[in-house]
Image (cartoon, rainbow, N blue to C red):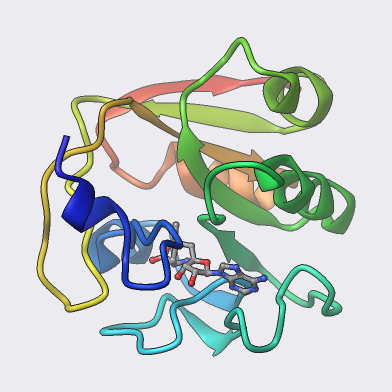
Length: 159
Ligand SMILES: C[S@@+](CC[C@H](N)C(=O)[O-])C[C@H]1O[C@@H](n2cnc3c(N)ncnc32)[C@H](O)[C@@H]1O
């Protein structure tokens, strides 16, 4: 594992979604957890750790690739209640997060074929992570957008 890629100076994990992948999902109004010095943006509006995107009011269509580690499920829970957006997380399907906020609550999921090559905050595309990824759609329109995205993988409606 390439730990220098996984952790930035302040030890927060910074796996940035390839922008071309997010474009396949359509336009987003808000990314509630964007890097402070982002090399690119996925949404028209972006919160960073300086804003604390978890405490802010979310609006419109949300793209969420949350900070990993402890507390990650709080971001999924917030998106679940917001009801309009698509999340990208590691496909750890046995976890409390999956059972409390995804399996019974999301509209659809797409298990990504192969491993995503995430970006570093420097703008350089780094190595692949040690786990597969899954997109999670909340809201019917987002389920349809995920289905029609053309992202290679296995799409499943959950509702
Ligand atoms: C996995 S990265 C994803 C970044 C971006 N959303 C993307 O998909 O390319 C998680 C991001 O959340 C940011 N972050 C951490 N804590 C945060 C907070 N409380 N509020 C907003 N952003 C936060 C980190 O700096 C990091 O850039």
